Length: 75
Image 1 (cartoon, rainbow, N blue to C red):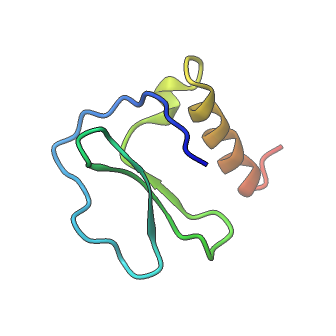
Image 2: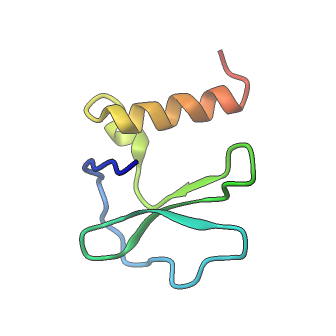
């Protein structure tokens, strides 16, 4: 499933090589890696933006944070 949404990406560093077991799950239009995950793990996701700053305005960011809280056992 391809999903596209805006992120507040303003960084000067980016992933050049992934560690074993990770996959790229999101890229910016310029090809920079914006998110990675370890699909064989219950909830291992790394993002290169600040989803908490977009909690109100971007449903995908809100979902990411809510799913993180759920994985941590927060109700």
